[in-house]
Amino acid sequence: MKKKWLAAAAAVLCAATMASCGQGVVDLTSSGQESASSAPVSSALSEEEVEDTLEGLEQYMASQGYISGTPSTMRGDMIGAKEEGHRYATAAATVEFYEYDLSNLNDTAKAVRESVEADGTFDMIGQTVQGAVLSDSGKYLMIYTAHSTDEEATATKEAAIAAFRAFKAE
Image 1 (cartoon, helix red, strand yellow):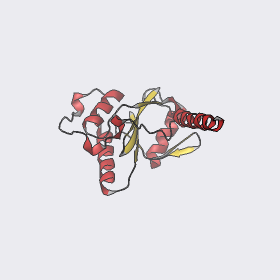
Image 2 (cartoon, helix red, strand yellow; image 1 turned 45 degrees about the vertical axis):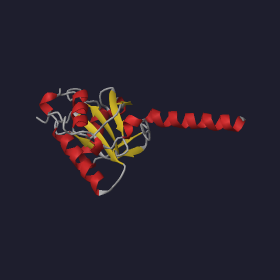
Image 3 (tube, rainbow, N blue to C red; image 1 turned 180 degrees about the horizontal axis):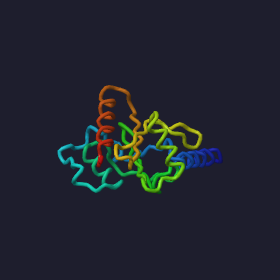
Image 4 (tube, rainbow, N blue to C red; image 1 turned 45 degrees about the horizontal axis):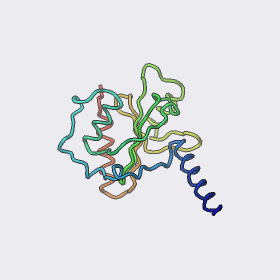
């Protein structure tokens, strides 16, 4: 009985540790299991119909079918972004969004943005984060991790990146 209790406690501790650094957490709720291609595109919003905010970006990307479900809150301050970012996890991909205050970039923000512009990666807590993209306006950062490398997943990722980059570009 004691071994079962210790195993359960270790599993909870492991999950909490992974959630605290923002790496490796996957939302396994039913709302988070829809594939990006299963979301209805007929109700797609245009950029003009949403605000130039993180929430507006997420509404736009959801209406285009690239994200779905309820997001997890992520710490944006760890990459010099505004305090909160959001992570959407589906069966097809994990996508994170962050917003920068372009008039108030700290050294961390500058370093992350410079690295993302150079090669689509940045270092955080001793790990290299891949799949990072800045929007053309420079205001937003997206981290897109497809869970497959098949043709459909690659096409969806490329389309999501194109839509993200163009969002509210000056």
